[in-house]
Image (cartoon, rainbow, N blue to C red):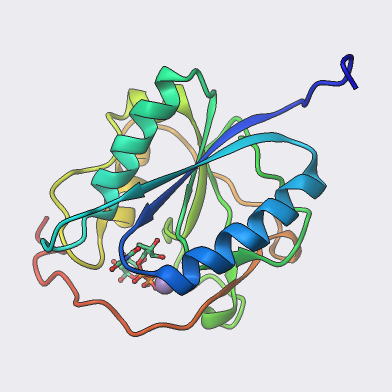
Length: 186
Ligand code: UDP
Ligand code: BGC
Ligand code: MN
């Protein structure tokens, strides 16, 4: 009704290239899931449309600028192949940036290492801006999420997670991407 407004407004940013089957499943599943959470949201699909190595971080940076222009206060940085299995993982920002996909089926629902900060992350738009977003230098698979974690740490911004029972996700299976051998050096 007219006097009913959502409590949270969220920009969901999805980096994307050539994952058609996953994208279809993602949109179908997420629109249903998010409707049940009764939040205001918009999904920003940011597509890399060239043959160069995939740059996940740069796509998030692009999406964050557009979401900021539209005055979304909260960003959720989201892999296209991850599906929340529990409605308790509210698609809204906590005060601290939050690692949302911390109980992932392919990792047997446990966190492989303390600093894992990939998959799905919620962060306030001003915090993302404050740390100057993610690095544009990571091409191909790996490392950009670890660098993101380190950026927050070096700006003294703590992260958080919900308990595992609210953080279960499943990943659609796919072939592994070519690793970026330069990732550790970067
Ligand atoms: N991605 C994509 N096309 C690619 C590579 C990656 O769309 O060719 C996006 C997609 O959102 C994917 C995310 O980047 O979920 C992370 O890549 P990937 O799933 O290969 O990494 P994983 O987390 O499975 O190691
Ligand atoms: C990579 C990360 C990746 C993680 C889990 C790490 O070795 O650097 O980018 O998210 O493994 O797959
Ligand atoms: Mn994946």
